[in-house]
Amino acid sequence: EKICWALSDAYHEVEGGHVRIYKADELATKLVAAGLTVRGTDHAHALHSPYWWLKCAVGVDNEQNPLTKAYHKMLVWDLMEGPWLTRTAEKLLDPVIGKSVVFYLEKPGASGAPQ
Image 1 (cartoon, rainbow, N blue to C red):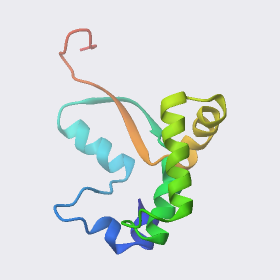
Image 2 (cartoon, rainbow, N blue to C red):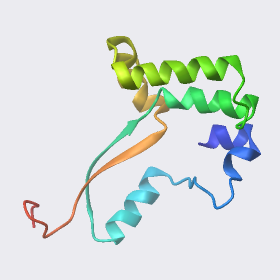
Image 3 (cartoon, rainbow, N blue to C red):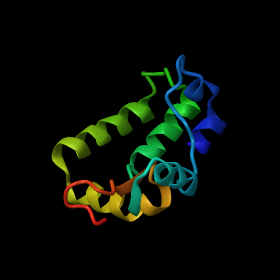
């Protein structure tokens, strides 16, 4: 997200906002304070990071740029078909450039959760 913010004001100035940047440990602290137990973390959506870097570089609202159109087409293909090539690439890239952090949580006292 920091790269997107650096490349484009329009990316983070959406009316009403949609992006909030937390460091993983900061978010984990908030989750624990809310009564949850963090059991693990991962990163996801690595193939989406370069797409948004491109969008921010050429204009977030620029729907006609050939690079972003082609990249978007590849992302849709990946989503719909799940080809080995892109699935493997994303698994390898997730820890490095994953756009999202994933938390595996338990709610103490919930059915099946350790107490």
